[in-house]
Image (cartoon, rainbow, N blue to C red; front, side, top):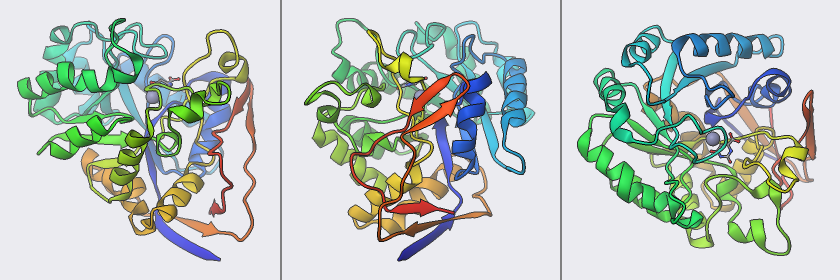
Amino acid sequence: MTSLTIRRPDDWHLHLRDGDMLRGVLPETARDFARAIIMPNLVPPVVTAKDAAAYRDRIMAALPKGSDFQPLMTLYLTETTDPADVAAAYADGLINAVKLYPAGATTNSASGVKDITAVMPVLEKMAQIGLPMCVHGEVTDADVDIFDREAVFIDTKLNPLRQRLPELRIVMEHVTTKDGIDYITAADQNLAGTITTHHLIINRNHLLVGGIKPHYYCLPVAKREEHRLALRKAATSGDSRFFLGTDSAPHTDPNKLCDCGCAGVFSATNTMACLAHVFEQDGALENLESFASLNGPAYYGLPVNDATLTLTKHDTAVNFPAKIETGEGPVTLFDPGFALFWSTS
Ligand code: DOR
Ligand code: ZN
């Protein structure tokens, strides 16, 4: 039996939803993680400081007794967002980032940004005060192939924005391509990337070969194997610009298994077991702590957690539930496609 104790990890990209779903999934994250950046794509979205304060209260009320999990709130950037409201929310310690969704890019992104020039006053204010912007980096043009949307976003949106406003601190969320990894690696400042657990494990064949697997459908969609290998290399390298953002995104089974299934992989429950497996397989267990617990706080300018998490490797496979039951219905847990031998405590 092997064990590894690391600083308690944080999840730098998480969907918790609201109401019964929030109550169902929050304990799954709070078990292993000290903090998480909470995505604001509710319906309606979390747009103002007032929305964020109310949502934070609902999250705190849904926490299991005794949990000291801390939600790190974000605002959903719209073309009518008020820079002064954003700045005040940051000054009050209420938010840690603002999220840019290109309108139509993904789940509940209809109120997102169509024209980046419309939000420049907000972005300029953020650059000035050091408030990071998290970005869903995919273009939405109907004539751009879904597998190319991240690479095209980097060339046509992200790079021009960074040239125009180099002081803005950006997190490129859920990087799925070698293009994204190379772009972040080449940047000299103010750019980092989160990587999900599932994109380290599945490529597009897992999604589509031998029958369609709706539970592997997410956005950005998984790419070809060479991209997955580039993500693995970046995540396991210890490079401080890459850190964990699970993008754990619960949808009930009826909403996944239908004619127009929702995008999202729910991985909160077994993420640390999956990551220990991946890092061990790549001979990089010593870098798991950097990826999951150190690099994120450093980029966000926050202290690392005092508490620790111990990962224990067992001789026999550890059983995780296939589904989490929530008040809204069952949510299927990410299946890495191999047995897991690590548990957390
Ligand atoms: O797969 C995804 N699910 N990607 C996103 O960007 C949004 C998320 C969700 O909210 O379900
Ligand atoms: Zn997300």
